[in-house]
Length: 144
Image: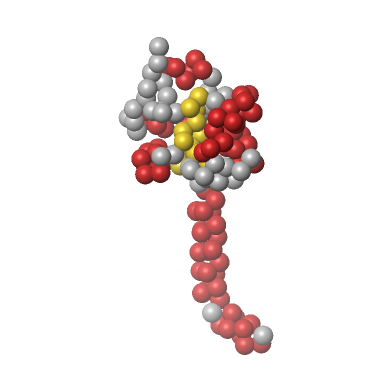
């Protein structure tokens, strides 16, 4: 133990750099998570949809959904989660992307946490909500 304290005393700059690197790593890793849910950029969402056939869930109301939504998205409002659970239960093992229309993604995060609590393995939210998707000029489907 004595040699360790001598080493630290003689190389305090190295220990300071190590502490800063560990701190930066923790900040970098936690930066993309909000409420324990990973936030993905639109390009990452596109990659998950294309490569892993991710399920996309739009938690906005039906009227907003009809005005424009991500291709193949399922419209499930937070209030209807219990009813929709039977329909989406089979998707527990594939990536699930949840989004809403608020910058904070509060509803999407709440919905994602609920999915995690019932056993969905890989649940993420669209970072920046639908506005981020549109900012990247990615396509929306309009109904009606």
